[in-house]
Length: 454
Image (cartoon, rainbow, N blue to C red; front, top):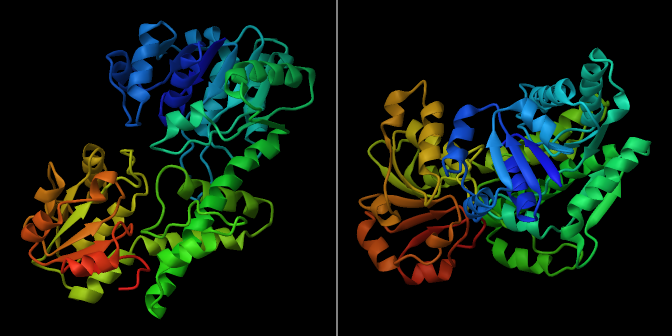
């Protein structure tokens, strides 16, 4: 099938590459000429395991192309995926200007039937706005509004495992209406996703608004589990319990399960923070206060400071002259995404208290340098107290303590003998509970995890 992907960011690139891998002819378009230039020169503007190789393979086979030509992109695809960004607005709601602009461009250039698919994460009611924008443009050219069919097909991709998630999905959610054009769109989507349903049916068909709400509900549920466990971990610290034992005890209940029950420094990234906020904002627009989600957000913001609280409790509020190694900058492993990353909050607070920070991340340091430059725009002297090094052991050399923020596999089994030699003090503040407290005690390391009985 001929497919157009509007937006060559995280969701658009993964969607386009994976659909091309299934034999479709995919045209990816973006208004960012620099991004398209990178893609056409063999680069990839984001880090995602397996994505670069898949893009190279399908470009070479002629199934995947990148362009800034909007008219050509609309002419190409019988199915038009809108996969542009929906950043949070000032009030926490999703900013739909890029989604609506993409819809208008489709309406301006289409001459025959198109299935328009909302792939971006959008609030309930967005499909109506997309349809209205397309129809308005069609009517300007005296074309039949029935040429346009709008579908909601939310993505459920985990950063760091997005290619695997797309190729072997838990579920595919498709929202359509009951009009004749909607039924045609449903059949087109069924054909497109047929290769993903060969072994068993993974597709759930529903009305459009239910599909739109499903995406937000899923992310809000996962974010709630994270904040709930972080609350329990902080309580475990106070009462002398071990959150890892608690996790195993409650996770073994089949009604609960183990997923997203790990305590840590809070969630970040491009999805959970803005989706929880946007869902809360949608509820307020309809006169409903989602108090649980408000609490989830509040807990998460506080949790990003939990390691700093532990450091201050150990060393005092004035950290002038002290140096801390920080392992992990990205909000999670296997990505270079620094959006809402806890590391940014931790670095800012340590520097504010006079400390130096020496950081290492396997992938995210270039992106982190860009983000920290923005964070410290008003305090360039503070930024001078943050440095990045080429390997984790260089980071700890001469530092007063090690702070672990992201659970990269490379951090799970370090050379503790070398670590102890390089650290000025044998202290680890572990925001991801990578190590067992008893094992650290045997090594002579002062170890502070999140909710671990020390």
